Image 1 (cartoon, rainbow, N blue to C red):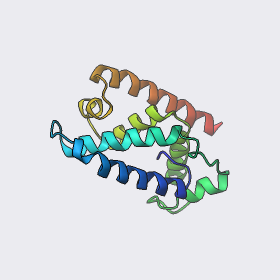
Image 2: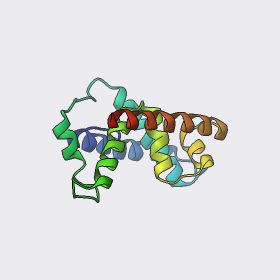
Image 3: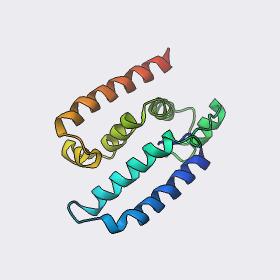
Image 4: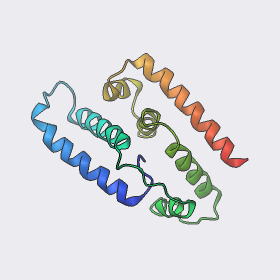
Length: 144
């Protein structure tokens, strides 16, 4: 979700695996391993996005090819088009909003998201509502 093309996705995956492996000695069992791992992954993705080597802008055709792994392969279907628009809109969000939407789509609770991101549960609700509103506006804009 954080990278636009397959090569960047693979690079980010490798970086996340490396950071989890490198950071494992600091895991203190204060939370579930999955919570700790999610936090390392999100932080790594955000740092990766901010790095100079991160962005390879792709044309619209390449963006569509990146969605070929999604479950709806009939590109003429309404669901495929809606899903594609949603993922395109998510790519336009800032890294924090992407993380919030990612966690929301993973069906994590507000408390779990707060633990992952290191912010209060109330802040999660506010930021998530704003991120969903931005996403809604981006999707609506893509229909016009």
